[in-house]
Amino acid sequence: MRPYRDLAPSLRMIMTPGPVEVDPRVLRAMSLPILGQFDPEFTEIMNETMGMLQKLFQTGNRWAYPIDGSSRSGIEAVLTGLVEPGDRVLVPIYGRFGHLLAEIAERLGAEVLTMEQEWGTVFEPEAVIRRMRETRPHLVAMVHGETSTGRVQPLSEVGRACRELDALFVVDAVATIGGMEVQTDAWMIDAVIGGTQKCLSVPSGMAPVTYNDRVEAKLHRRKRIERGLRDSTNAPTNEGAFIRSNYLDLSQLQDYWSPKRLNHHTEATSMLYALREGVRLVLEEGLPERFARHRLHGEALSAGLSAMGLELFGDPSCKLPMVACVNIPEGIDGESVRRMLLHDFNIEIASSFGPLQGRIWRIGTMGYSGRKSNVLHTLGALEASLLRHGFGANAGAAVQTALDVYGRDV
Ligand SMILES: *Cc1c(COP(=O)(O)O)cnc(C)c1O
Image (tube, rainbow, N blue to C red; front, side, top):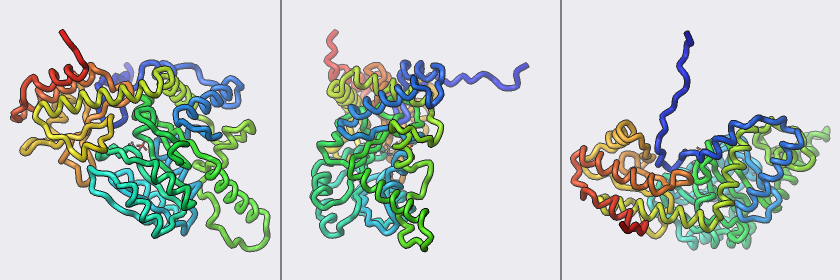
């Protein structure tokens, strides 16, 4: 008798802001035979993936490759490479992931300056630029799509100001890459971090990043100082310049991704297959087409939720296309509704964090989960669950309204 059962995960409809359903082509790619990390067949796959990531990030940057780890490993690698103790780092915060940027910068010994915007809104670029002129930060770090509040922050004006004021601009585009425009070069972003388990429909476990020569220059300077200190017998004076990580040291990682192939970690072979297939799917679909698809399903879902009699959370002028946030109606137990969706309908939606915990649900239409059938099933199931919980939903209206958005005639 076998001591443990076979794994048999349920086939869920995952309608959260990540992780989302994985495209079957990606799952298939993950089951292919592994190669050694210096096998020419494998290094060819690495090179090809870098080229595909440049297209995804809309950049001419030389460096675009994945960090092995969840998305925050990419954030941590970029900030570890760019933040020296005592550097002034400005972090405008409008949700949970802004706090993450501030926390990581803090741990690196930065002088962190924050400004906060009420959850559900974003910053006027002018307000950020004004603060930059007052404080002259070395680096500005911002979230593009804040999944905790379902908002998207305009970035191009801040990018231009960073160039003018000689600050590095780092952007967390984990939630938006592959789902809406992220114009690395046009918006003058120096380093961008993407995610796999959101709009790319790849499992969690890698973080594609890209960065330009301004970033590379800083990495090189820190490396030169480190080497100088190592060689010298004199007491070090600027120890702070050391990159304080081995695993997340971008300068070592880029040597590994360069033709030098200097050994670093053992590449996560199957995850790279998955990422390559996920990005291949994006490029096959076409960036504009894929962004339009994310907008369409987001619109159908939001229209359906409103028709049901629910109230959408947050400023509509900066809504993240692929995340709908809904106020949990008065007197309804939000967690009980989520449990019913999961257990009776096999559908997962999310709650939120911090000040929004217990106040909103978040429903994602990202990547492979962004399909018409998913949207229609989710609306129908939520309506049924809400009726069961005593909420007077306008029965039947949600799915019909979503069908109208899809332009479905009989
Ligand atoms: C999901 C998400 C992250 C964190 O990603 P992990 O893969 O959980 O580390 C960071 N930033 C944003 C905006 C996200 O949506």
